[in-house]
Image 1 (tube, helix red, strand yellow):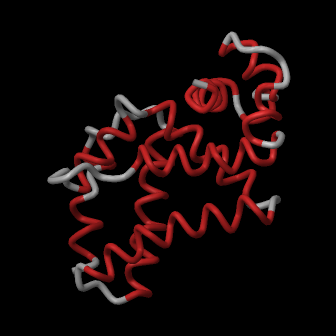
Image 2 (image 1 turned 90 degrees about the horizontal axis):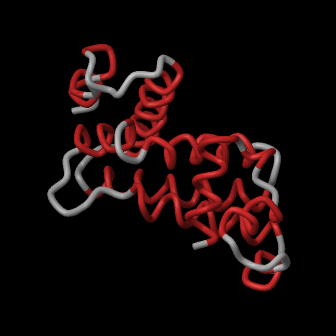
Length: 156
């Protein structure tokens, strides 16, 4: 419950507004719950990164296009939270390691699918750019500008 509430607050209000106390209040749990369950805000943020990436993974049989549509549709708040956490990770070494580790899992899946490692990393970064652009333009990803098909073709 704390993790889902944290994702919702970060994805709607931003990471600065999602203090431990704000998350606890929104979740309806006693103050100190974040510290008790996660050792403090740093541990909570690391758990949020894990939570986001676990939910972001493609389901069995889900195409990249379907994943992006989900990220920009039903999972839009979680996607915004992921980008908030990514920015925070540029200034926090522990979060950066966790974030890069999760991103590297996407890279490894692409490498296992036959894409050279450098191209796999570039594709993950390019897809991030595509999704971020759609969020900035408040697009649900259904317009031609945010269709990942041409981008995916470029990496075959």
